Length: 338
Image (cartoon, rainbow, N blue to C red; front, side, top):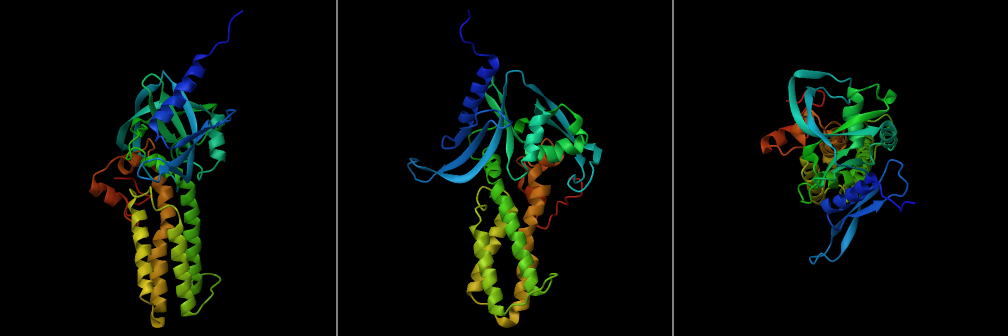
């Protein structure tokens, strides 16, 4: 009779967990799941709160992980073409404009893909692929990959048994603050979607007191100003303004809310009520509500193996970054990136 044995796959699983823990901050917690139903673990984000780094506090942020390990990863390149906005229509590619992206390939069963799809987009599920020989780890957000790559390129995907996932090698997990930016952003995603709903509600309520909605509700000047003050407090209370410092529209809106808060402290004259509300709805909250559109059309494509991702989520020069992220959507979402 033979003694108990370990299969190579079990060894790879253990190595994968070890590598993941090595690559993320020591204060982050990896909660492992028991039975494997498509999610292997959840990473909960913590930050140290004291100078001696003795105490770490949870951020209330996390992302789910499908963890895969292999010592036979196929490294290749994927040709990504310029294309129109796939959130608004079918895939239309410009075959004359392309970029070749170094990637790692990994095949996922369709059952795993459908599990992630059923979870929706507000709960990020990252496929983390570990090269068990090189002890390197690469990530891709499966929720975004499904919507931005898989479905546009293969509308008949439901009839397939599996799909190959292409992970950009630039998505390597490295424990430095700059390299952790994507993971921190994914951890904050559910908060972002909550804030988007709040901003949209606030904008529509301002429209109501302006008489611009289907159910207008005029209120006295003082009540209108108090409502705006409340909206500002609620908006600033959203725990979204950090970890997105690299996305300039977030910084702009945060600054504009604080500026408006200070202006209100100096007083708003009743005769300026109409102009005041127009400024709030037409500028401040228009830009806040537009964050959701930009998030869908730009942010969710970051770190994907696509043409647009290469010019918006890789380290660009400052001029290109500024042009790509103008708050009025100067990077037209329905136009091919240039």
